[in-house]
Length: 225
Ligand code: 6PG
Image (cartoon, rainbow, N blue to C red; front, side, top):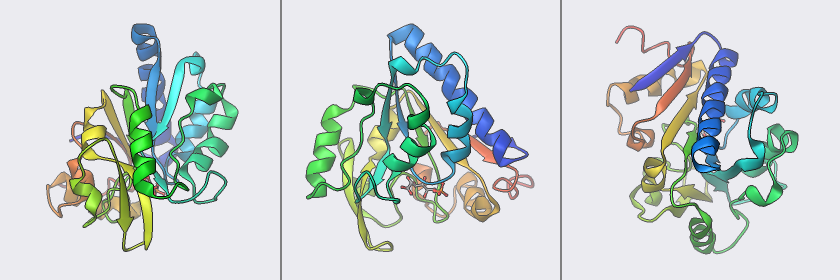
């Protein structure tokens, strides 16, 4: 595993933001656009804060997607889209038409998954992911149907949360040019060690060739492996 560890969440976020910026500049230079999927959850907040003020960012040529979404509308406090809007997209000049929201409020969710798959580019340039304390990523939760889904986007009922989700499949995540996984906090140290050691069968282990940005707290159990 390609794990980059940093002393603090802030330095971890700064490193991830720099990788985002460098990849964005290269994609726009080479292909005229940067197609990136953001993760949900709270970990990326610090990274988004750094990205807001990142110099020389080609925001006009950036297309934003989401690797998963809760079954809520865009104004819900639970919405991954709303979090990205509040923490990043309201602060940078990405054209509105280039922010592609997952329709978490659409029923049935299968239709929303199909519609979202249809608007994806042939290949994403990058997918940003987090890791839950149960080893899930995107909305690929342990023991759920989407783990075996084919196609690019799937609906997924998560019994533990008693809710439906929309999520990228492994195929979509692993087809992107790059994958970044951002993990901070002591609460994830045990899972991260298990994933690193190939134990536990955690869903995030299905993500291939990712660069992991990890703070010292989350990486605490990796030191003596
Ligand atoms: C979601 C996310 C999910 C998230 C992890 C980590 O919708 O919840 O996409 O996969 O990345 O649960 O969440 P935190 O960053 O809040 O720990």
